[in-house]
Length: 153
View 1 (cartoon, rainbow, N blue to C red):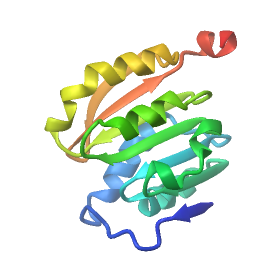
View 2: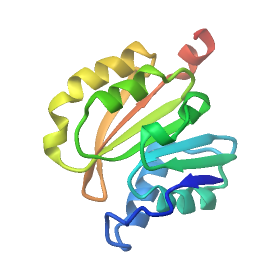
View 3: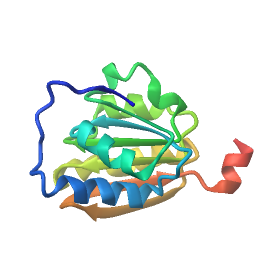
View 4: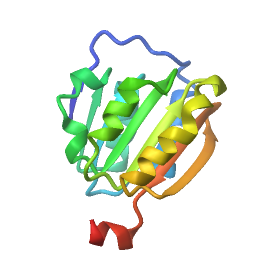
C-alpha cells in the first residue's frame, strides 16, 4: 500500500473514523481482489480499515493532484471529506474509466447543492446505480456500474 499523507492531520475524532471507514467499505462492497483508491481526508485511517478487509491494493492521496492518475485503474474510488463539489471533483470524474464503484463522502449538507450535476456525470460514465446515504454523520453518494453494463463497456 502506498500513501502520500505523512503530514495530514486527522479531521475527525478517532471514535468516528472506524465507523465511517466501515460504512464506506459496506456501501461500496469491497472485495478481496479490488484495487481501491482513496482521495481526500483521513486516507491513512481509511487504508488501515481497507487492509483489514483484505483488498488486493489500496492507495490514499490527500488531493487529486497527488494521485498521479492512479484512480484511472481502480475498481473502487472513494472521494472522502469533500467540502464542495467543484472543478477538482469534476476532473476526477471525467478521468474515471474503469471503476465498478465510486463513493463521494460530503462533509456537510451544503455540499449537496451540485449533487444532481455530479450524479448526471457519473451516469454518463456508466455508474447508473446510485444511492445517497448517511455514514458517520456525513452524506455519502455511492454510484456503481451494474454487472451487465460492465460486460458491455
